[in-house]
Amino acid sequence: MDRKVAFITGITGQDGSYLAEFLLKKGYKVYGMVRRASVDKYERIAHIMDKIELIQGDLLDQYSLISALKKAQPTEVYNLAAQSFVPTSWAQPVLTSEFTAIGVTRMLESIRLVDPKIRFYQASSSEMYGKVLQTPQTEETPFYPRSPYGVAKVYGHYITVNYRESYDLFAVSGILFNHESPRRGLEFVTRKVTDGVARIKLGLQKELRLGNLDARRDWGFAGDYVEAMWLMLQQETPDDYVIATGETRTVKELVQVAFDRVGLDWEKHVVLDPAFLRPAEVDLLIGDPAKAKRQLGWTPKVSFEEMIRMMVDSDLERLSQ
Image (cartoon, rainbow, N blue to C red; front, top):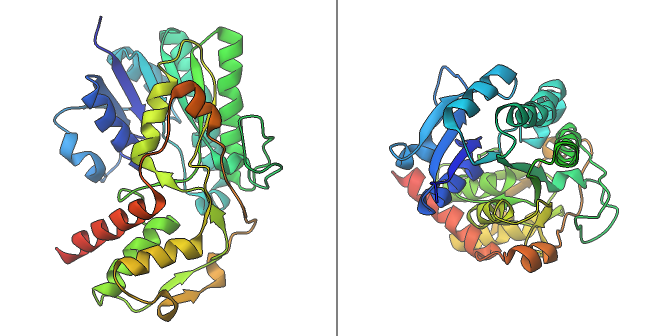
């Protein structure tokens, strides 16, 4: 059997780096798409740079996608690139739409033109559910996005379904609930907390300013979730799946686990700041991963507590150097 070739957009991000590691272990040839930038941000993939090949391309530029696919000749494409920080989507709604919505169409159209046999994975998001109409959320739950990011992801999701049905492409969407790791960006609340806790423990700062402590999320480990992406593309027929833990935690619980890790009382350090409240809050997201467990054989391995401790330890080590 010919060696499988993967092409990952967003390879420099959290999910892209874990997915690249996972596929390399499976014996794949791995290509990653990177945007032209004056400063290269390759820290998440620095340890595997000698094992992967990077190709310049941009979801805003159709020709660059066609060119990249012709060069890589992949058997699988994982579209993880997006403007993915929800608060930024209010500040830059048009740019968010171009990357996160129309960018998916550009990639699908490029696959259709270059090689319709390529299997395509689209990174959908639990933010598509937004103001939830059913709890827990399944593959059948109606979408009600509450941010420009969520709206753009709904478009990306449905255009993937449309190309699957219109052109018989093997195109799937993974509706991933929140997934975190030591490689999460510092702007995301989990990493903001673990980094803040490490800084407070090391005497680098005194307080941690947060918004809504009662917001609940279904948080899993990114390293577990990339396996589910791969499993979706190994099935006989393309389908969409919710990937989640099925458990929900509050931001307050996240804070407690993180401060407990370093032996500090969170109430002495956390300051509630209205500046961090969203214009339209998403209160409760909890996924039902029953279909993924049944059809893919997928279950998360790393617990919430293990993940937060891992993140705190990683930030302590990084800041101590």
